[in-house]
Length: 483
Ligand SMILES: *Cc1c(COP(=O)(O)O)cnc(C)c1O
Image 1 (tube, rainbow, N blue to C red):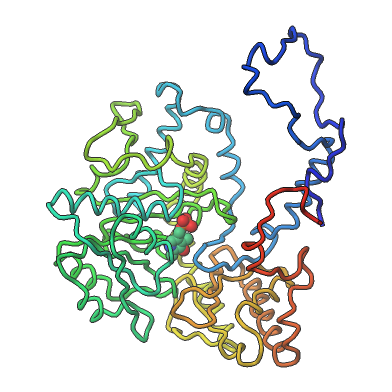
Image 2 (cartoon, rainbow, N blue to C red):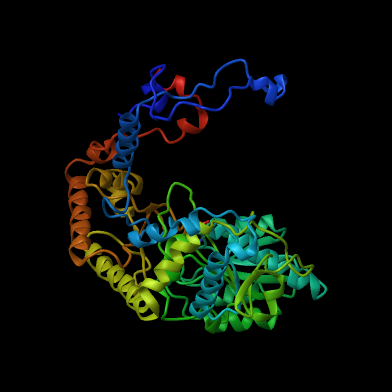
């Protein structure tokens, strides 16, 4: 196991070489009042340059990542991220600027945001976007706040937001944080929104409905036009959780399906490395009647230059410092320029074809309860494997031994022993076949020796962890590790 940096530390060892100091020395207390000075030196690690380089390289290869192996983490769109995106986001003109600089000196950055907003409008049919939210979930919050502002201005903020029972957990969370009650809508036996159940819950107290399409089972909501009409008939708004937009880009526009507000997860669909909690970007697009509520400042083009709008009373306010996670906007912009509209159409189609091909291979051994044609992902139920001795959680631990990242487990909640698999467009036919044969081998192992599964993983840097212990016995100081 790679040691912690503090454990590698040797007093006096340094990792830099600087020319001798030719500035006159000052006592620190002449610059900073004594009471703010610590009497102890900070416990910073002291290591050489090669040590620090090896330390981080060793950690990076211990980790699983998309450049190392298959990463079928459902709902997360772990596609390959072209290295060009990294190169552009590191250009000094983007990485070295400060948001407090005068507008005239950051014209390219403003232009990039302006053009990115236009592209996102093209892809979605929305009228305008804010690029501020730092994640899909913060985008949801933004969207529901806009909903509330719209209804309040029409005289009544209303009380409830409808959410399908297959939804991602962030959906009800965003609704509740915005002061609404979250009302679940049942799925029917095909895994789609049950329109009768929806109808029975509709009244003038419904502010809106939040739908993921394709939904978290990877299924397209075929009755979206009916749903949209019913929602709009009671004066409510329709929100798209656009986390699954990878299945739709250049094939279908959310505005055309009747959505009034949508977020996009740039880190998923538009290729930024993600995982481990960030960083992300969750721009929110709205139709024209909602544009004035978007967070400020927005970038606008006046004659040939780009400026920022000032505070406005219609706006819901700021959601994030400055412009959100700007580096991610640069990556998304680059990716969009790289692929173009036709390139995205090919990518979406391949994402759908890959998921359907893999689903076909996997159904040989595993059950897929909502097994009709899927879009970009599908959800396996390992109930039959559980009866033979290995739960969904055991199967995915064993997958790690074969160099594959675990799929999403136990979500969506309407599938028992769920394994949610999203191959993305960037995998080849043979890598899908390899993955399917690993799943077959694991299924054989369950028949032959289920305890192998419950003890897995064997080949990873760390064996199976006690998932509850880390929460109950927090260890936050480095000097306790290894005791
Ligand atoms: C990822 C995801 C979210 C939340 O997005 P973050 O960017 O992780 O905050 C919401 N809904 C669905 C369906 C998702 O897959």
